[in-house]
Length: 304
Image (cartoon, rainbow, N blue to C red):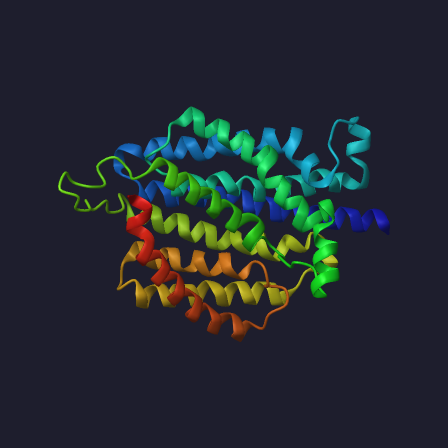
């Protein structure tokens, strides 16, 4: 019976890993549709090679930093329990590899290929696992201290902060360091419009990400007995709420509309296992309005 449970859980988390792996195709097409035509091939190659570098860095260093265990053992040991530990690594790797994918979109068209690949190895091998281990493995005693001080641990079910915020914060620092894209401003200081090169590619990327996100959120349970329909419906409501708010505040901008569901899904990851679906939908409207004001108020500063 125990072996059967291992087999079921291994299949469950493997399907989740495959769904989140597919999200990286979404990252690729979203970026391809956003950058100028001359940089589309670079964006495609960059996302794929970033994932490859992330895999090597996380397998050899990052997973051990986060969870204190590695995979330098014989194959018989690694395959015990239907290889659940290896499959769990695969699933968590797809989360870790999202960090450079998030950053890649933020610094599109302004970073050299080689240095960015080296930065990916550093981020996925050391920086991200440091935060991952604190939040999800109680490293350094920080989570127990938070629990003793405030009555509950920091809760991030599927990575709103651990994955998306960490990637966003690093991306923001990179943007501020690199500055504006070449040709973003005219000689007299006016903004030069850079419209998306392909709305269909952008939309395809957004849809792939939305579908994969249900694996990202729901299968963060990591075992079949912990799966929750609440997570699925909260994710759905966040997706549609983000879409509708983006439609209103984005003034029918198709690029803005297709980023709306992604913003909603990012926000719902942390509490998707404990919040009511109607609360998710209502909160999406308030949060998206706030994000719109912040983004549009500071967008020019980020490009300066």
